[in-house]
Image (tube, rainbow, N blue to C red; front, side, top):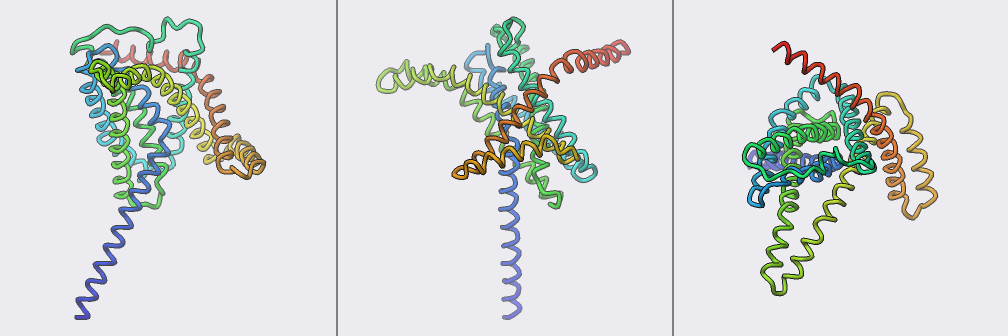
Length: 322
């Protein structure tokens, strides 16, 4: 009897450890997903443009194709790379994060530059695309999946950096899988709702009755909502990108501007003790965003006049060699 009780006690102990592990994994997955918020918001803001110009019947299928490509990017390509980095080259995570953060700053600053520029004639986001067939659809989907790969790489790297280094490799794998699936479902589910919202509103308006006013309101609401979503996505990219670069510099031994921003945030929080936490976060986010915008604006000519020509030259060499 005592042996049976001891066995049951061991089983109960194992169950408690397993439950704690599950709870820890879920908590860390949520934390890691929150760290990647900037890239996630931009992913949701960017994707709807890829269904522009197609019939309403093709909008959701296109979004689902992109979502499947996003899952493939995260689980089949990026997850093994992230685990290999964690196991054999953890020192490379911070520099890779900084590269990704600089890319977010560049993308965000480029959107700001296009928005402020007087001539929008060459802005690809404003070019009206004609209704297309299967060829154009596949081209759009491939372009969206390529864009998603860059954002997914940033999301997975940010998530990996948020996981304690002491966690075993299997726990890191499970956390990253949960992050990949959860973020993909959330982003593309949200995108599907966005692209169908105006059709739903139009349907309600055409039915008439008490829901007609609601339908007309949804149709009127969606264009400004998309503009707000784009602005929020751009701001999130610049803020998160700047924060990643500053934090990475701090980890690598360059403590400015991290320390200066920290001191400014602390001083502002002490000046307003009633909302110290909020003030600290807001001041930090503001200066991270200013840094990110400046860095992004600097990177625009570097990308256009140095990196792009180099990539073109390398492609030309391989093309001529073929």
